[in-house]
Each structure stands twice: as structure tokens, then as C-alpha cells.
Length: 427
Image 1 (cartoon, helix red, strand yellow):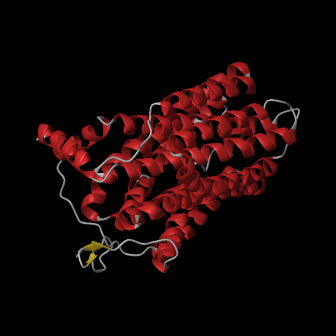
Image 2: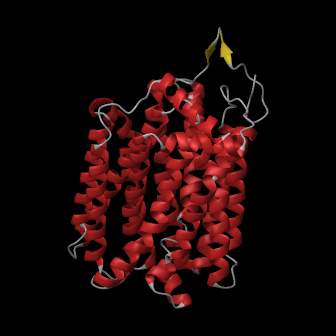
């Protein structure tokens, strides 16, 4: 018997692992807990995104330089997510996730008191490392605790929590910065995240199927090599990267466009625009059902096309079209992210935490690298340059998805043989 938070529960019944199924009380608790944790993570991860114009003005920075306050956080998460996933194999999923969300919330409040931009960047980078604990283990926790037919919906709801958190964080920062500046905004987001962390800890059920593993560095290297040797997983990782690079570009520099003429919107209204994240909430939950009907490849093609159309709709200097375009783009992005991340969970049956960590490392590197590159496009060619960058990325996503083939799932026998071969070569 093993439980990741110290509570003992039976791991099996008559030799069959206990997994939460859709409609059960435990399934609802899992979904609500990880929904709250996802809200907390995305609210903190992109807390400075709405504040970039204010940071540019206050610290005399151009848009690309100010965006570093976002990029270092996603970059810190990307670099830490694999080592933290290794810790989760020893300490347990829920313990690592709990430490992650509480530590990140406290760092978020501390960042509000940074005396200069360099200190703010350092604190945001450390916060990114702290945040790594949730995404590094959440998908592995779901894959272990939720039965296969219910996993797509559960993963979609977890991603939906991300979208709600992203929306709430931007709404809070937009309103709070109008009232008291960027420092008050960061304190407000930190307190919001702390509340979500408490909800997460209270609701999350103990693990039923987690078994601690004393994986060595060499064994970890072998598992990572096994996953990277899988061409389907490589494509899924690249898909996460390009989708996130496109999404990060749009939302990093949207505020600059809406604050400037011909729109000239106040900061609070620009923050309110992020209620559009609700489109991601619905499309994430719907993505699981779409995968069941069309398959992963067709769903990812659809998501890339929808994202591209949304970007094109934002080109005219019409606030109504910009809002519609953002709704469409956000729905497409979250559908693509949900489909790709759930496919990773279905593809592997061994080393799930490491497979998820590799996906998330690529995903957040997409934000860290794609955001500044998109910033150069925006700085050089205006909003049209940012849109062209997004279109190129979505064309790449369509080409990558084309190579997924008809099936994403792999048989347990094949995957275990591949993993053992790479672990053996690493040892």
C-alpha cells in the first residue's frame, strides 16, 4: 500500500487498480482540486503579462525586454520540470504539488516588493522553478488515478483550470494595477493563488496507484532517452512548443496594442479583455470529446486552423473583430494543448511523470523562446508582424501533426521493452 500524501488506502481490489471513473465522488474531487491548482499556476505564471506596458514605462524598457519578466518564469519552470518530476517519483505526487503551489504563491507576493527590475526578474525565475512541481506531476497523477475512458475529460478539465487561472490572474492584475500599480497587482494575484492552494490541499484525494521509485540519475536518463526515441512523443512535444509560442506572442503584446491608438483603452479594460480565456475553458473540456470522434491528428489540425483564423481576425483596427479573433484563437490553442497533453498520457505506460515533464519543458520553452522572438516581430513590423509569426507557427503545427499517424496509443509490451533497453544502456 502506498499513498503520496501519507494516508494509506488500498492500492488494489482483487488485483485490479482502483481508478476514479467519471461521475464518482473521488473523480469530482480530483477534478476540482486540480482545477484549483491549475488556476493558481496560470495566474502566477503570467502575472506580469498584463503589466508589461506598465513595466516598460516604469523601468524604461522596450516590449521585448519587459517580456523577460514572463519568459524567465516559464523558462525556470521548463528547466526544473524534469528534475522535479524525478522528486515526485520518490516523494509522491500530491506532496510535490502541495509544496509547489504554496511556495510559488508566497514568492509571488514577495516579488511585489522587488526594488528594481533585475530583482523582479530573479524572483520571477525562482517562482518559475517553484511552480514546476504542479505541471511536472499533475498529468502523471491523473494518468495513474483516473481510468482510461475518463482521462481525456479529466485532462481537459485540468487544462480548463489553467485557462480560468490565466483569465483570473489578468483580470485581477488589470483592475489592481489601475488602483495601485503593478506592486498591488502582484500582491493581489499572490493572495488569490494562496487561496487556490488551500482549496487544492483540502480536496485532493490520496493516491491509490502511486508506488515510490528510487530512480537514479542514470535510470532517469534512460527513461528520458526512451521517450525521446519515440517519434510520436517527439512530435507531441514539438506541438506543445509551437502552440505555446504562438499563444504567448499574442497575449504578451496584446496590451501594448490595446493601450495605444486607435484603441486607447485603460489598463482595467485591457485586463478585462482576458475574460476571453473562458473560451479556452470550454474548448479544453470539449477537446476530449472531439478526440474521441476525430482522433488526435484531426483534432490537432482543427486546433491549428482555428488558432490561425483567430490570429487573422485580430488584424483590422476594430475592437469587435479583435475580441472575436481572440476568442477563436484562445479556443484553438487550448484545444490543441489539451489534445497533445492527453495524447502523451495515453502514449506511455511507464515513466509517465518524465513523459509529462518532457512535454511541459517543451511547452514552456515555447513561451520563453517564442515570446521574445514574437516581440522582435511585433517591435519591427507592428501587430501584423506578430500575426505572421503566429501563422508560421500554426503551419508548422499542422505539418508536425501530419506525422502522428492513425494511432497515438502504444502497447505496454513495446513501450516497456523500449524503456528497458534505454535504461540498460544508461546503466
